[in-house]
Length: 380
Image (cartoon, rainbow, N blue to C red; front, top):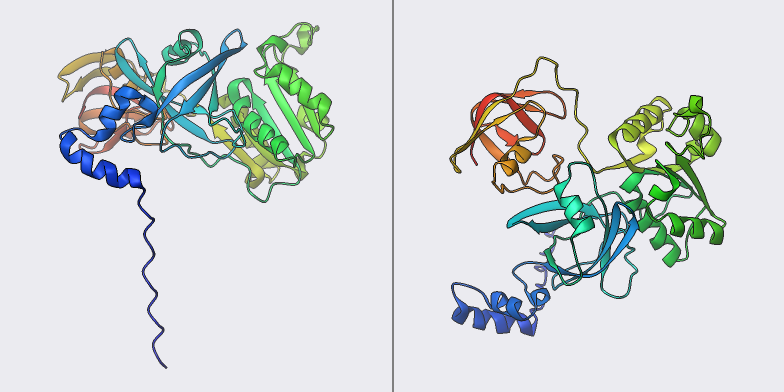
């Protein structure tokens, strides 16, 4: 049998005129690049890093704000439900956080939005909600994440969200409506009070306008909605509540985002019902195990920075480093991206997600999800 003909090598993408121009000018810009000088004229034109300009800010609630960002060159479109890493300079330090894109991919003005809720103890979320202003420039990453609707959309989607967990669902809903292919959809959303619902007015308008969109709001602390003190917990998720709100939940593809307690309850319920494969979850924070009552912290030494600080058994090593004035590399802050990885030089740390103790010299430590478990030294 004659051998199969060799496949031709794949064609390389054509280089743009800008590429050839900067190849030449970069030789004269050394040790910098042409992009560094272009950045002085307009940060959005730089190619060595991706930045975005704040075009508008809008207060959704008393503690949540939508920020409209115009990204620079090298940006690519997102899928509804994906997230993006955003760099935020605060008091001379640079921090990175991950936020879901709340706008649909079909937006035609070249911008996208993130919607941020100020959380207790969150220095960056408070800065974005209170201090970010139009004209500011922020470093951004490219869209990431696999929490999105498939191209072959589910016939009967069920969104279960709480608090700022509404953001990926909002992007999906806006996208489906923009494409004029909104299917029969049920949306169960939890919030403490009616005035705490992010996108509250828009959600109610969607429900009134689109008969296929069934919005069910549950208020966990609103005395007007739950007048009987004995029913104070009635607004929280339960199997009975789900059955009453969405009788055909077993026939739906479920997309959930919210606080760890809600996601844990959903996971347990759907696993017991044999529907775990149909539950899709997006987490904003890592789910931590209970720290043993006899757990102790210790003295943490950062070898490269020559800094030493006392740490407890609950605070992540990343936060310990930041409170000590350091700015170690980090990204998602929930143990997914591994940007914060470092090496354990000595001592012992504990993985807050599962309680596992790491004490082998040379082991990799994710500082965003590990805490001191005695004295330790890290390669930072």
